[in-house]
Image 1 (tube, rainbow over the protein chains, first blue to last red):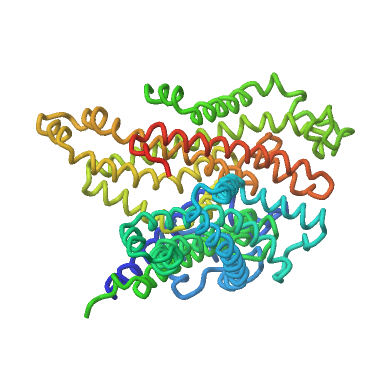
Image 2 (spheres, helix red, strand yellow; image 1 turned 60 degrees about the horizontal axis):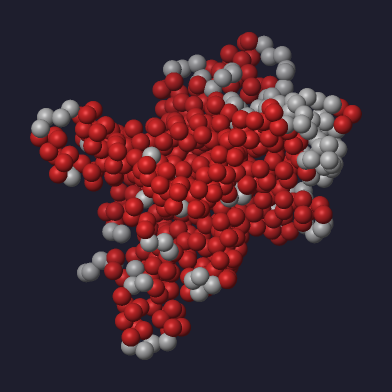
Length: 313
Length: 278
């Protein structure tokens, strides 16, 4: 990627963030119920005086027309102020930073588990195509993509947490023991998808002319696989890896709920459940930003990985 | 249609999986007849009964029969996912065809919007939309449609762009054919098979996403028997009544497996390029 392309991408990210924040903002406006009343009373039925409600409404600027409210929000967001969350009783920005390590740790752990399984399984399955192992791998990956993640999580909780009593079933804090089950849950679904993709990528490379040529020149199969095919197959796999990481940051939300894992996804869902809209707005924008930055970094890394893309000076 | 009938005769896997899909639909339709109990009838003295001959899948905290609820759940879950797939398909294909055929400003607006949706983890937006609008199956379907249609729009658009350049379409344009006529007669029939294949392959994944929203409480609401919601209720009794979590999950799993297999086989039947199997 040239500097110009990177700048263009950053510009695109800014535009998308504006769009996403506008959509969530509009949704919140359309939401049923009075936001201010809920902010004061939470989900409980507490009597609140109209004067109190009006005062808070004016304080939050919620009595202004919709578009001005959005501009207000945007202006404050640009100064790093995303408002105050009444659910966790702290500034939204602080809550977002606190949710970050949990989500990042969970994503990296599950990504690691996935790669440990998928890459060897995918390669073996492609090389020994049609063998018993290949068929077993294919059946397992097929089952893996057909199981809802949250159900897998519940089954793991039941088997390892309750029946075998090996791992703690109460989440809530970050530790090695509490990390195992949620990351395994995420890894199972991802590994199923990724193994298939590794298998396809390797199979595709194995059909290329240069492989035939290398065989004709008498090179050993292992040389062809490790020195020729794998490096070539790695590029598409890294793109997919980047996409999985991005998806994890957003898609792990349900699993974070199942295991009460303190991450951004759970924060988002709880914020929505408690109708804490300042926080909802913040989390959605924050997750979008991370997702897009990761994808940009992945694309930029091609420069180093693929010599063909390097700019000739 | 002919291709489908032919495929049914010649492709055994397609025939078998199609029958399984029909069986699922039949179970959903016949739920009132084959269910041994009323799925919403509470019988407090029968709460948390383990699976037995009377209650094959046990009972829940209100003494409702889990087996009957799973059977009835097929109704909510299948209706939900079929409506969802249909709406994603319709919205996406329409947008994509308009975008590809008319080009210009229409194209720019639709595609920029779709770029935005794609550069973003859809599930979190779906959760936000469904959650803010308030939990109901209809809202969950709307939320997932909003985040899923862009994939179909892109696919339809790229195929329209290809078909548009073919001689017979250009001939039709030169001959003064109206846009609706050209779209309907020349373009749609060409892109439809591929769109249908994509939609069929997506049923399973969309079903899991819909169940996920219900599981979080942003989809079906109690006391409706719906698989995702049942898992949510079962989760609180993981220790005392694990069967409440096992059977609805198995139901989702089996249904998704059947639809995924069917989707794969449908592709083999409908896609002429797919003569060579890997």
